[in-house]
Image 1 (cartoon, rainbow, N blue to C red):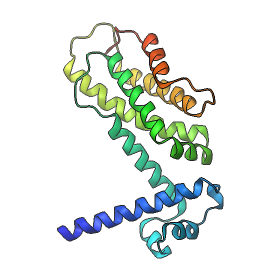
Image 2: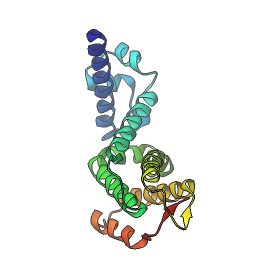
Image 3: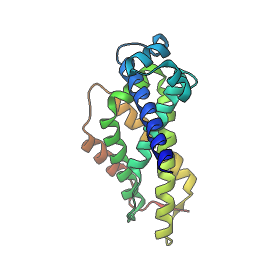
Image 4: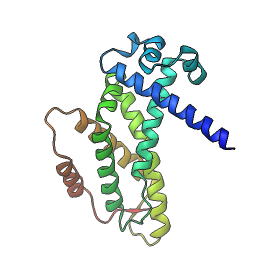
Length: 196
């Protein structure tokens, strides 16, 4: 059992090393110009080792993106209950903005290698997953709700607005501060939002 755990750690470490190597290369070289040999040389890993873990550089990029998405999901998860949907939404916006700040260079590299739509899809799928999780928990703790809006509508509406506004905030040359952006959302949100 202990040996399997060590092996799993080696696999994880190798995959992370290859992903880091890819991101380092993306800082100076377009994705289509990077080869598996370049990735391996930069990571100081044999090519055979690369192919033990990934089928191609595209597969490695997908893995790296999935790792970032999982990190975002973990970052946006919260155990304590919220008092309102507005509080939940503002919490999620803050966490997404903080995450985008800390992963800015990697996310910009993904944006540069893919279209804005692909980056929006990557972010939106994770925000939807987080929002679904947070709203489901909220529903369990808040059964008495007036003027309820269907949960799916709220999830699509909020995840779309968070994704587009936060990605535009990330790539905007004249940056609004994170706190200002959260304040704008606070003003826009109605305190009386509830779920059907």
